[in-house]
Image (tube, rainbow, N blue to C red; front, side):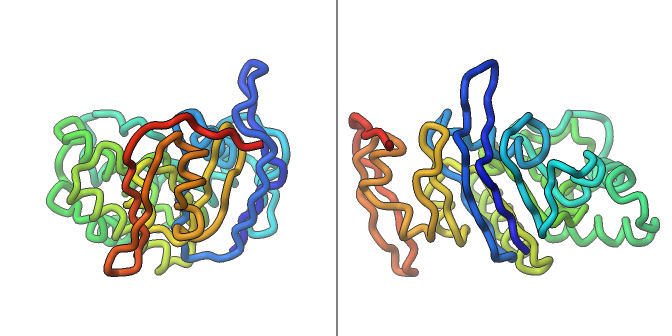
Length: 262
């Protein structure tokens, strides 16, 4: 599986949010962290790949130009979860996932759909909530239900915009563990915008660091999480240490004047 972004750009009302992004991700079965300060262009990049924002340049997935596909064809290959939570309705978690499958995967039999839902709810530890109405759930639980709707479709590319933002520590770990397992099992690719750099370093194989709408660095967490790049991207003085498992850990010490990438 390959994802290639070629001079991808996004502008709103004449203001450029993303400047000619060139990215090539040639390995599947990976979770990629899209990191950077607020306003760096992370959400705009994800929305452009998903086809929800006008863009310049091209996005290619498995040799197909996503811009030349219909929205229905694109939705079969690419699934996007925004920062906003699923609507609090009277539908149960199970019904909400089933409704998503009926729209996104009409070719599936009823048996296939129900088997898929049961597997995904089990992976996400949501079985106890399956018959609960979305409107009765906490924000974090609804966010997990939204992820279940995406994973049930088994898309080739998952685009998640801050999926851990409404979750407590345990649910953050549950989500990221399940996400890694899903991506490895289905040999797909996930790009996830995330603010917690230490969670990203632990669960992601690759990082894309953005600053001011541009790609500042691309590589493993150890390659991207350096004091110099953190100062440039975030305007912080930070130490980067290695835990006993070999994972880099960012210890931000103080806000400083950021340097500016050229």
